[in-house]
Image (cartoon, rainbow, N blue to C red; front, top):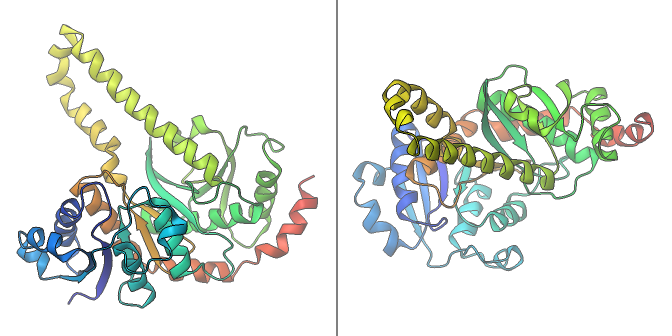
Length: 348
């Protein structure tokens, strides 16, 4: 019986709807308990969907010929309720689906998700969170761009939500939580970071707080949850991604330029393939918008079918574990507003 429903913006992404449907075909095999609501242009969707008979059995297509484009501004798209993205998100609000996945415009997806799904009571701001690899496994990082400026309360809430995600998505029983900062010393960093550290340590959140972490320590695996404001987090993420691409490119160039390196490839092939798989960005695709009354997942717009399938599977797994309800329950136990004024004085 298919009792888990994922809503899909079939027109979002650089190569939609083909990549979306091909990705769903992979995800459907890995998630036999899941059905899909596809929103988009039926004339474009149907010919591709017909190529996947098994997938078609668990899909329902709801037609609209309107879509959100990459260049559209969030302020414009929230007024149009007939786009594939808006309709897909609204299906979660109506209870027709438990999560929505889109590879479309990030700003638009965040704006519509906030408007339609609303923020969980007591959560001041939702955040964008993603899962990435470090030397000992994986970690979650937030915020990655939803909020360029954050208060201490925002950062403390991100820490709580990141802790819950690490438990559910990574299977870490007691995640180590760290605040991204310019130094490890207690008095380093902006005022709101120091206040957030005090709030996390002195609240009822019961987090395993590591303290501050500097950017160069992130890949070493010293923390399972990295917390930052959206401006800092987005820059850190793109720096990490850029460095990873540079290293891969330099290795390829070094091998191409050396006869002896080419001779050594057969002996290093197993190790190289393992590293490539670990660093494959498709396997970490799917940034979650956390803090909303519904699960909204953003796939990379330029990903392929495998990458999109990972985003869908991540959404399905979090739904099975009642991720949104867990955040709501945990937030109810903590009154961060009471700690905010105390933090201002205690930190000095």
